[in-house]
Image (cartoon, rainbow, N blue to C red; front, side):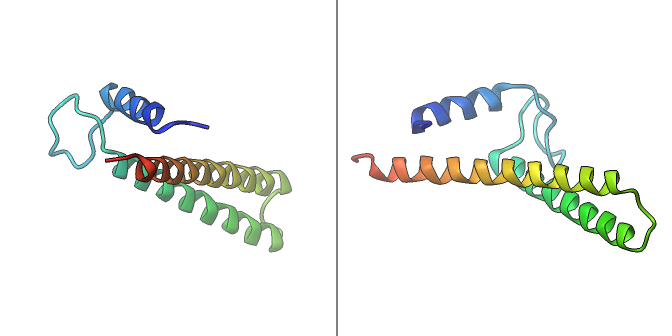
Length: 102
């Protein structure tokens, strides 16, 4: 289990890396914020899920190969699993922070 301290250190290390800024208003070299990172991951997951649904419809109409459908579904599933794992870690860290004495 990841502790809140380990999660905070990982977030600090991630923030200090040179990542492209979102929105264009940030200073150069400043990383994207955690909320934007989560939003980007969820949007990517949504797009992959829709692409898999499109491939399934094309396969049903006889316009797509089965391997393309399986690949699209597998990619969407992996992306969704990643988002769910991050969500579980965030909830766990929040619960641990709430248990900390003031």
